[in-house]
Image 1 (cartoon, rainbow, N blue to C red):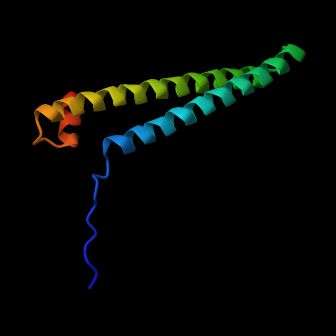
Image 2: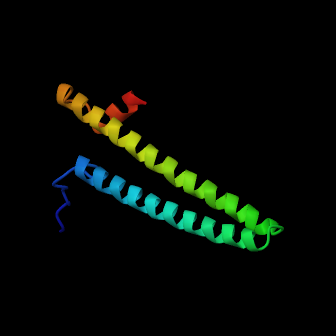
Length: 106
């Protein structure tokens, strides 16, 4: 009969959350870079043909994507700040779980 698996560390410890947030930030930066490169491409198309409405629309969509990726980074940083606040509060209130602390912050 197999023995039950017992986690050595909590599934959402501070280091794992920070690692995931770093990955999200890196991916958002890459998305922003690609969106701005694509924007430059459509900008060149518009320089060649100013009447190309499809290129104009796609250029605007690229700018929206670049802004969305920046907003995602800000949300991740906000969550990390809340995590730090929850960790500090955890030192004061050792009996509360991280989930309860995050619920109290929002």
